[in-house]
Length: 401
Image 1 (cartoon, one colour):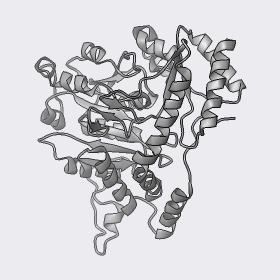
Image 2 (image 1 turned 90 degrees about the vertical axis):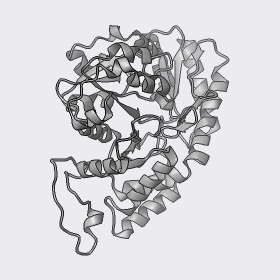
Image 3 (image 1 turned 60 degrees about the vertical axis):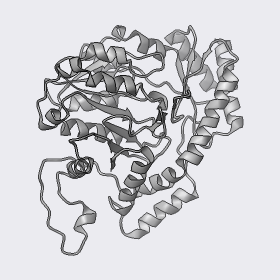
Image 4 (image 1 turned 60 degrees about the horizontal axis):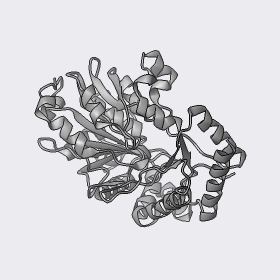
């Protein structure tokens, strides 16, 4: 079977991990700090904090910003559950909004959903395609929107408006109007999970890009402390001679990245632009060229004059398909020993969120996108012959159904 998304593993990664294992330093240490600096230089943000997951990054930022009961956070209905779960963990209310035709959150739907209780908007770059950040950033700075904002923490008072917290779990390497993902809005969170373009097995990072009066380096230190049980010194700092004493300044969390994880990331980030993204774009181009000849194939947007994705997913839609027909097509593709997926089942369709009263009928564009979508394999070691085999399987399955 052609698998869906195995991670890229080669000798360079093995050697870097082994070097870490023998170095005597396997938890958060010099390699994690080096990885953070490379990520900052690559994305163009002002500071970067590595963690054990993107989910942890989103939640730490919400807690730092003072989000809690009585507050609302706007989230796309079309996303993975982590985006909404972190809001629930804070005791705030998830406000789902509908998608645009490009799968991403609709700026007009965001505007309609804003209330005096709105504290944060979490746009999600589905498949690696950046959201319309110009529209979203301008929206929250409009005088009529700012006048509604009711701060209830020092951080909220300092910002004086709704925070934009970008969920860029798919989109490191994406570019929007000349700027890299990581520097497009207030704060951005990456994911380095095993199926992502750039993996550390598990992992994530917070990209700080706040304007004055915020000190992004100071914010890095504050959330680094929060990620280490509220401890004022990490193990690397305490390891310095005579520097053992530390304090606990808050009841923090435990979500730091280890040097073992960072070892993988160090290899990947240094070859990401000239190697990984080039290969992934080639695969998407090959799918596009092969499938564009079929009237039933709706090709996803992944590159324009002003914008390009991270080429993370190929989100094929079958024109005029129903959800049940799409599912039958997927089963037929699997019978031909090709693994595909669906990104994503919208959250209002999930049992937990349905139980809270959300209805899928309120998000018709999201449902329409989901009901016709099939995600094709995209990964570094997928050969051209394998891509051609995937295309044959999809075409056969559609024609058979």
